[in-house]
Length: 254
Image: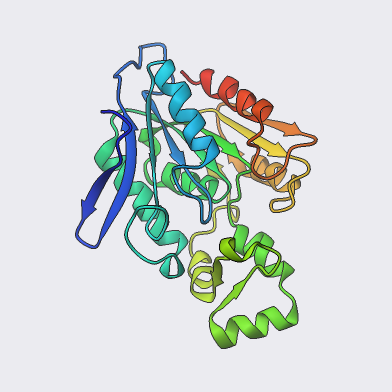
């Protein structure tokens, strides 16, 4: 299958995805393929997803990227989204569109979704690469930083916006999202993964503090847990050198 956008049609939604299959997983491989899980308000056309699609294709490795509901070309409204809903999207994609153990590559919020997948389908997860992984970001990062005025507006209007973001990139942080996410937290107990883990984290990340990666590593129980800190790296880790580092890490799982 080429990189044409296709749709996984479910009773209540349509999920856009792009997939290349080569069936190249060998007996010595950790993973049969890689599944990319994007971040909050990101879609499958982002820099990292597009870069990995190209590199996996050149290496004859299966790769799948998709849009959560309310993102990109998938159906639904972003403001109706929840961690549980986006996790279910990822679960349906994993179950219906992939075969064999997958390397989960989770960017920002996608790291949270990946860990929920690993908990739900441990036998399908060969390993996890987190890129500025942000599990529990609503409770650990967003809520503690709210001002009294933002808390009041969240209660009154049901959503707040990042006023520092460009007008065309302002997306709602809803009360529904925050409340629902409290039932999806993963850092409240040890996290067991059957495959290796590598976390990439920028130390100049203004969205996810680099110590969040250390907290995640402390919670993880896995055959191998590594952290690579990029001192001048920002949240996106999308510079040429960051992408090259990401690919070197991923190659180790194939």
